[in-house]
Image 1 (cartoon, rainbow, N blue to C red):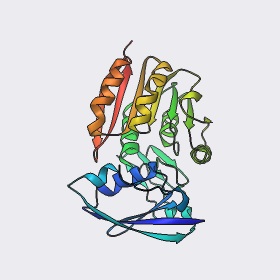
Image 2: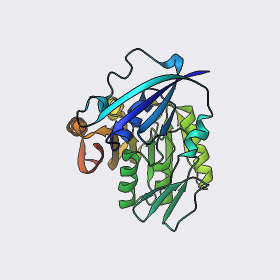
Image 3: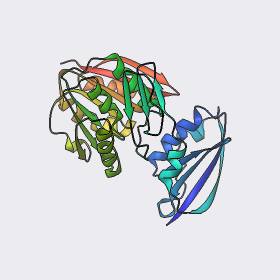
Image 4: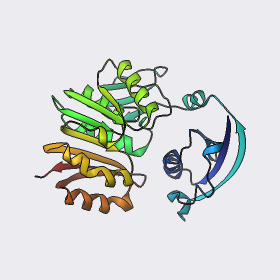
Length: 275
């Protein structure tokens, strides 16, 4: 199988590198390697489209100087490459997201995951911020939905905080497999469903939706339809410039803004059902 390697030089490195990684992931890039000057990203050659980077937000920002070269590469063991650069993530003094090969530390919530390609390891600002919001709240005996679950870390933390039940949904079968594996590693149980908003069949006290702006806006009505009265929903995966649009759409559907966090131009926000 042939791949294309895109080698980016970035100045300054952060937060541009993290934002670029997230945007490339949405385009189908399968693996990423940090470099001293920036990062390398890899995609199957037959998935490459002309001008596919034209709409990448971070490449249009004047405050960052980003250039890249492209090369043809042979297939690699992408998971081994990714694992080699995986670092544990601490969220305050309470939570750690780590792989089995990392040394455990004394925290209230020690989440062990297999660091595969699924989005949601805690490295990205959006996942980190929702984990932080979850740590602030009580989930005792609540039914929750992790929508666009990725690795499942959001729902896993809710279960560790004594949620009664968590369902996990993602359109990517790789993410579903990874979530099931990570639930087992943490001695937890949850139901996993392959698909999108059409797979939501129950009502929930809590919904996590860390996806992207377009999907959030398109599927928000479905989320609200399955949110209990006085239930809470956590949105992330969008930039600060899109926050007003998210707030307005949420208000139109009967959601009341509660609070938000901002990191590296990304937003995580909590709303509650106001009806």
